[in-house]
Length: 314
Image (cartoon, rainbow, N blue to C red):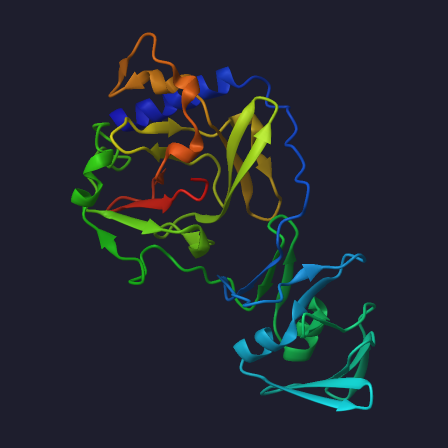
């Protein structure tokens, strides 16, 4: 209960300090890299990466996607004309580099943008993956992600994520209740995840999709895309008190896709409360996100163990 009361207090103070929340997020100079997720796991491309062309079409390297789905890819050349074939369990595709059309199961389909050769890889429009390989495909404009297949998210409950002893985190226990659950009970241990593990479900609860570092007129923020609104986080700095952050309520963005964007400020006067005691004169403005080693999710669904992500902004 003590932890819950402090979390609510932190949220109230943070909102009151951050103003109206109407500041616009600075636009990135270049768009984020397009990612491809197969059954919610990000695919790794050794060289040529997916991209969005000048027409707005999402282009993916077809060989890696096809082979990951169990299809065989063939290449042939007639003079200066290059042909690419894909044979899957239930579908067959024949393509020609430079054309906008392909034969899918013997039927001619026009995709409106050329099949191209780039960095020695064949790139095709995203829709061809759906129609040519019989897969459910979605374009996620918020994350710039290509979803292929199912959306059965992995969970931190899975055995792939090992439980670490709390003794491994003694350097972060200066705050008395940092490794307690929402009921103020001590965790049995901590599961450490990486940004590359996302998207990931916390136990049987919310899904954490991504973390980004963004700028607003009031300073730096961590933007967390999640299926839940307002989960508190703690920034863990070695041999220092944990930095508790609640999201700025009036900055929340509903993406209308069962996800939202939560914003957490770099600096907050709540850092003056250390082990629930107010430290007069403590300069909270010097803290930088890069100082934290981990970001701990203080989520209600995490009762037996805590989940800490290695700080991707360090």
